[in-house]
Image (tube, rainbow, N blue to C red; front, side, top):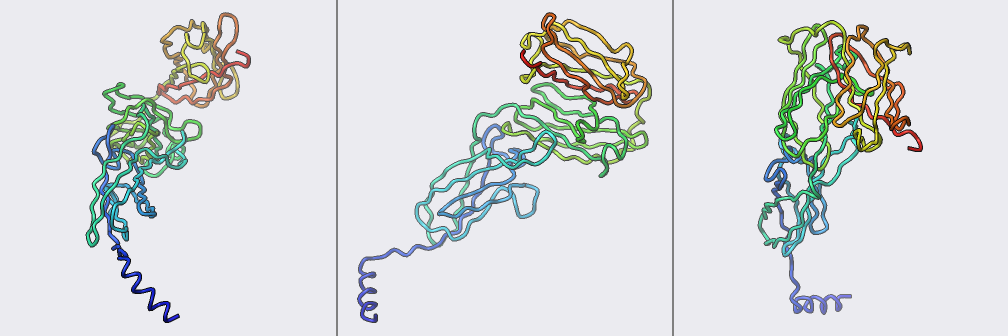
Length: 342
């Protein structure tokens, strides 16, 4: 055994083995179009994953968390030429604001030469994946920590500055489909100043800030409205509802859906017909909202509606539930499903 060792060592030295030295690498990242050169928040990226020399490490991408942000360090990388990949991931939410996981929205592959005995710094710009399209904003709210039912607020007024598709300024039900929140559609990538306001008859509530849309995934924001004593009490009097109708799974308009007539009526919470609520109207593009006024009794109501192609019922919804509040004018988007066989 000793002879083997004595022969082996000189042979290894004679072959000229190269001894590599580990290198620490600091990665500084930014994000290209549509929100080029901007921060994690602007690009709506929550985590960044880097793989180099067989090592994979994930970093929090949050500009407002101490010790996290636009950079991360990986220790012990072998010197020499290294190829590495970087991926930026965005959180995903369903229409109710429930977290459903992450999707890769940015990425890049890079090559570098690492010198032994140094701290290497890599400044990288990540490219968005795919083609950006208009995305949705999901707003979920509380009121000084309380829910809609706890404060009894009938509605929340949403204002969003959108110079591209038009500013949003509308009241919506405080609760829709059991969720305290709303989904606002069709936003191009960019940043959007917003305000939210509500009133429970005693206190006003208010919040403001900026929402960021990356064009690759829906943006979900959990917002707590603080008490705003400057707001006036909510109005009293009869309620008004507006229905925006679309038809079928593609949410088509009148022409695309082949609809010539829309008929509808309301029933109250007991199932009784609401006098004066029924009508049969021509369906022409663009179809204006159907407005029903002077609903004097607040509470739960039901809408039944049909889309007819000539005399054939092509689309139908029965007992779509909605709420009426004193003095409030609320708009509901109602999709009529296709009748089987059409």
